[in-house]
Length: 155
Image 1 (tube, helix red, strand yellow):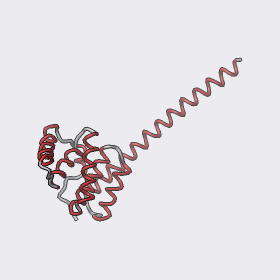
Image 2 (tube, rainbow, N blue to C red):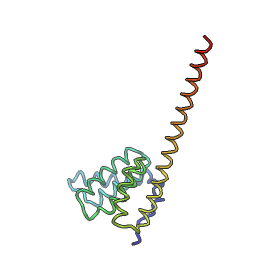
Image 3 (cartoon, rainbow, N blue to C red):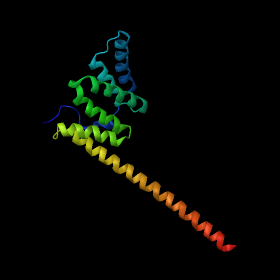
Image 4 (cartoon, one colour):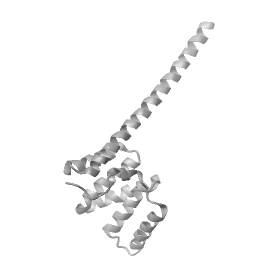
């Protein structure tokens, strides 16, 4: 089942401040009128998730979670953008969870498959950083122990 949504490579493309501002103004206008349409809320959440600013991404994920809980007809879109939002925030466990849920429903979804690949790369990158940090700590520990042994043998 092909998708008409962008491939996950779009995950690296952010909206500009002005683009997000247009979405924010529409959202706030409807909020002031005490009636926010699902489409406006979704558009704003989508824009926030695509922001380069982490606080915006967090708010976008929060809005998407609200839509997911209250609007069953929008769950498919929400699953993808929730996964994307968590991916952009570096929360690969949650990103994988939402993306896997989407893939369980749509196994041939190229967008979700592409995002799964990005999530896997993020997990691998995170693992390499963790190994490098552990290796650095081990090297410093070894140097400290060697220094202590050398100092103890000189006395």
